[in-house]
Length: 540
Image 1 (tube, rainbow, N blue to C red):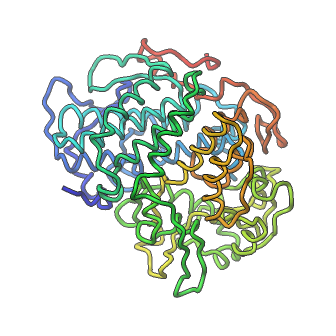
Image 2: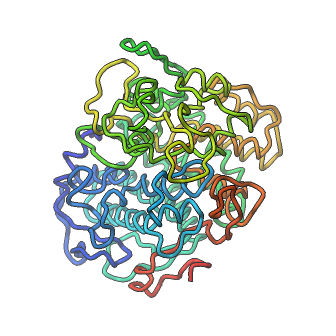
Image 3: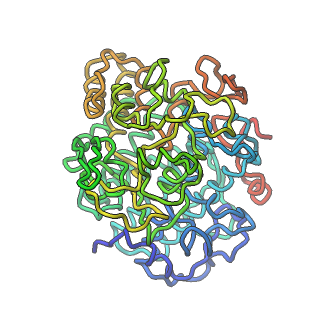
């Protein structure tokens, strides 16, 4: 049976009435009783597993939250992608936040986050809520083998986030009243790897599942990501394995890069093939074949203040009349350009040259010789010197709630633009990077990079070095919530002083910060409630 995942918001509201606690054990809600057999609506709870990537509760963007208010008083701060994005983008060379009054955001941007980091807390409880939900479905509710494999994939994806962001943490695969055991980074790596390998053949074949659900290719891509970062996680490189699984993705026979642009028949605006990935009809304009795991958003049925809602509404400036005229967002609820682009990201396209101060995407991308330079600069400065000034930093027009076919979106206060959580381009870059790490600069790696750069109308890279590839990760995936991971892998994050960006380490021009901040702290409340846990080094 193929479910219409786009309608999971309606289904999830009847997800059996279970109130599920994190396996960490300190959420003050009524837990699943591990001594009782759970009775649940399989369809609704299965859909809820996918909904946890986007939604925060049982009632739109606020009300009836999954994570109770005594843990996080702002429901939006428990949205998986929003918190993961905050921790990976604000700490890096890509994104800044306009409002300087939030101590937690300043802590992220200045790389001075502590054991009391609030946004890390929100993500931590989201991850373990989702893991516990998966545990309940897998052990007590699910019957269909393929659905069970997908639930195990979602659980593994959440544990992979724990592995990357926290490095260690509580571990459980069943709902229990006992304290969860502690897993270090090697143990988490081994678990995620073994789980993905075990479910690989149980997942749907490429392209045989409903849009929005995972299949074999999602497993292969997550494995390739795991192996590419293996040296960071475990001290042992697995670049050969990263190449093997990236190659499986590249040769999957169904998913492929989108090379087709479009012209809006109503406005006449031209969209490049790259832009098509981030528009409101990216589920049907050809970009859907590039999205290996999209997080579905709909302005009516999946209202959230995270995901592409955040990336669109927080990027547009309601005080700049030119911006909506030049590059319409397709919304009416701009948050006032809270998100800004750091000048270091612009440098990845312009290599130190001054970017044009223009409202035209065509002018900006032509000057960069790269279709991916989707920046709006009219009225703004390229470099950020004060975090609370609107004219510091360019604005992103990468994500928009407009359709390439000119049709109306379902709403303008919430967006229809699906979030490409996993997409094909990652496999090209993973293969290229792993190949250069294993063999040095080579033509095979160059050929993989050339496919992406041809799509963006950018000049090819010859004998690409690791520094070239690090920059290419930024150009292809900027603002997609992965930059911290990449900088760590290239030794351009914590514990070094050669690579700098605005406000790195708390200084305007950037300075080094301690290497222990490559991971975030385990929340103190969980340490107090579970004596099995250990705090990450540096946060004691």
